[in-house]
Image (tube, rainbow, N blue to C red):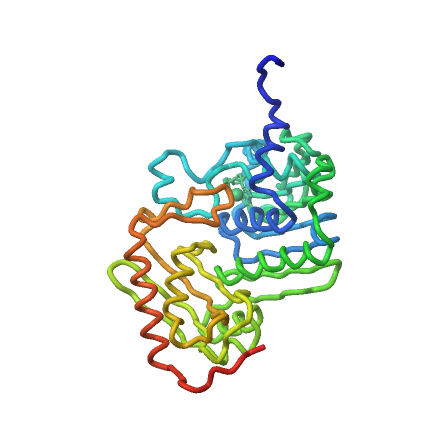
Length: 344
Ligand code: ADP
Ligand code: MG
């Protein structure tokens, strides 16, 4: 038997990266969530080679103080929570302080940032497959942050082997951007791949503009066949759009559910929605929806998994009832008895 020893920080990060950074899409999720947490109103994402070759995210958020920059890339370093109490009511998307360290450990990362309005006061940190920052040096940069991730998994061949084709990786990445864009109408997003603009979404500050964004992301046919939801009951809120039964799908591919602005997958939520559609959808068809649940953050635990795609509700029965009854009522009101036509 070998003797016990502590893992090097780099190896510990690479192991932890396995949980957070599965593929280029996960990098985009983490980096863009950081931009949103930093209060950005415009986020531009440039991708090359499906994101494996390069992902560059530029935001106009508050930036990072130059003294804090080395810490930003260190593991378990965050500006978002201080105590367990903060975690109970966390409203930021991040709080674990491990995404940048994880990404840095499996890529060539450059982070330029400026926390002031003096564009000459920017700083740049680079790291190459390590958690340690190699160098911090001045660089011109407007207020905000640019994260440039190149050669993902260049030093972890075993992980690299699991990557799919450039097209598949980009599809996953684009899906992540769409979810984030549906979560934040108040932020402008752009996405380009190999120099070609794929998404260009201006700030959507009116209902009409929001519906335009939904149409861009979900297809124009969806928004023509939806019921608008806006309901509140004892501290729970549900808003968004659900597809009419005339807009059913053969796959569950147009289903977006957000809890306090965070996209989630949840069996209980899926079940409640399915039940609400039971009488109006043919068996084997899937509803399309973009729904936003708001709930007191203290009544939902988001720290279930490092990617935070899962949540735990304190009172899951109440959430289920609320979703089911709200959607059931909305669909009953419009129920077009004999128009169960396919949308594909
Ligand atoms: P977390 O988001 O969980 O705090 P991260 O590793 O993703 O952990 O980021 C570490 C820290 O770096 C954040 O807490 C934040 O202070 C800072 N940071 C990262 N990205 C940005 C950004 N785009 N703008 C401003 N600060 C950022
Ligand atoms: Mg983060």
